[in-house]
Image 1 (cartoon, rainbow, N blue to C red):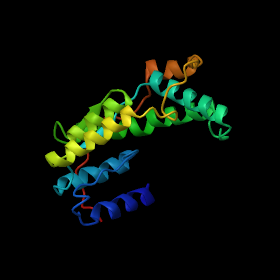
Image 2: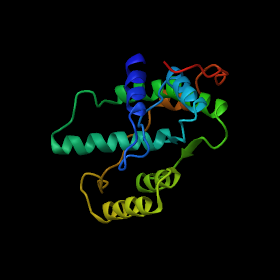
Image 3: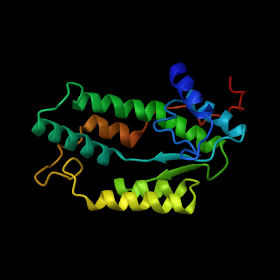
Length: 193
């Protein structure tokens, strides 16, 4: 946690430039400790939005197996792409990351945490709409996105003959029952070191 927090703090403390007037941090926070850092940044008036790309188990399972199938066909499958690794990552996400997001939703002003549930391209467009971009920059970013959608990229095209295996019962049981976790944090913002 400490190394990730230090790296994010260093990146966020860099002065804005003409080309990068705002910062977008991907994959942060993943823990309640990291969420506390964002609450402190918010308390200093330096946090705009937290965008949470909310994916469900079925979509993630399908995407994972689709990626494995593509890598297998291309001969680039890695050893860590196994259903067991997926189950561990999903379990960790539910136990560690979801409480961090719930903490932010409970402690930050309403509308600061934006949950986005949609397909890949729709998701990117919705994220663009939440960012404080100048009108010209927003138009250019959306045009780039439209250009990407128009290109038929085999890396992102779904395989026509692909079907994901069924989700293991124990993973579904965890999804339906949920995990025991503490109530969302009720922490006071602390000064950021």
